Image 1 (tube, rainbow, N blue to C red):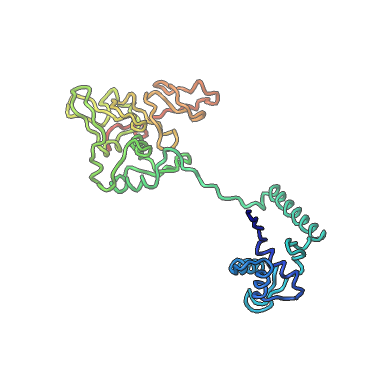
Image 2 (image 1 turned 60 degrees about the vertical axis):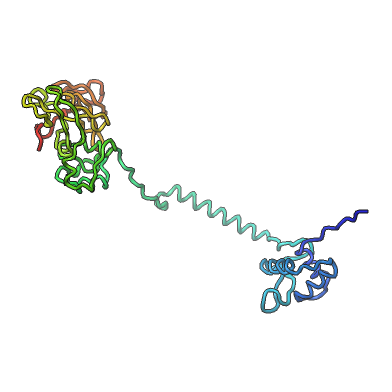
Length: 319
């Protein structure tokens, strides 16, 4: 015949029951343990002491002597029943006070939204502009001796260092990670070959160094029918070349007709190829202006706004 075991109450309930049935104002810890052992046949002292400590911490049971488990008494304000701890009821006045505080807080938040002077706005961080030279790139260029090729742009839309009227196609390629330089090489890096291709005339090899790319003009339209660009092969009769398209990641040689790097665009600019293409300062689009630099007919705001992107120096030679 199987016997059924009765589940004992928790240590907390047993402790409170001892207080309820004792008829005393205070009881020692040892008496509590002894009474629990007699009534419930529960002899494990450690859980009882742990439960007592918790009751003391939440002030259900108050300590009458030094030490948390000396002589103890029930907190009459909290305990009504041995199996249920009842918190002191909250008065209606207290509820009204809490409601009033909540209303005041809501009113303050509404006031802050309507009065901008009370709202402390966080300073907005300026987003890094695309295709603008970073501080690191500027430091790296200075490390290889290229500082003289750079100047600080005064235009608000640039907000970075640019080339001194030249080399911006290469600087843009560095900024956009299409090409890289090694500052550890110092000034020797200026003579490192960055691009090679065969000459269309004699098929001789043309080598373009970092220095060549920094010194080439951004505009080749004024010399493509004459001597061509500044980067040359060894053939005396051959025309010179520009390395164009560096900023797009697809560089190629060109005598100047299709080398036109627009610096009216944001940051370090972008290649627009044909020297007859222009940047409209009204709609910021490129259009075919012809040799004389006509207006942008497709822009309703143009009114003569299209302007010719000529080389600022009018010079296609290496500095």
